[in-house]
Image (tube, rainbow, N blue to C red; front, side, top):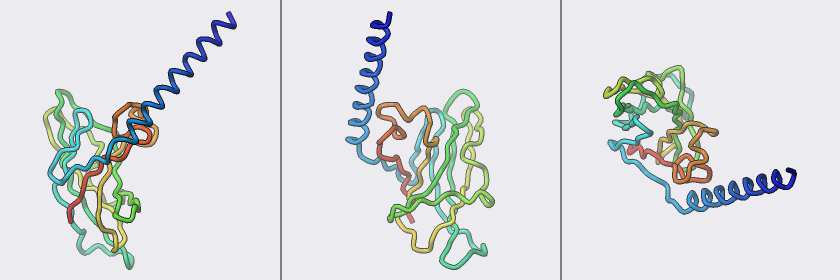
Length: 167
């Protein structure tokens, strides 16, 4: 019994190591995926399309800070009401990460959308004045089920799928 258990455990560990090795190789060989404004970034049945990016006018903010609103169309291409548990953040050309300002954003990106329906989400981000080359990243979070899927943009070691925000 003990030999069978050790043999089974070593086989399981070996299979996991091979799988993780393949995941690592595939993840590091694929380039960063870029989605242009106006093109859909789909996750299962829900698709996100950036319509425009605009400065929030007349909002009192501190010196050297600006607010940027990203207008996103969220469409459900499925046959049932659905939603994705996604979070968004912006990256700039310097690699800095900017989280959304929750108090001034509209509909959340992870709201329910009726089958065949669309919704507009307008997350607002607080950025430094010198933030350029903005790209939006949609993610399910650090420990989502996609983390171990070979070829998924959110898998371990994979380069990000970014939505380029032309400004």
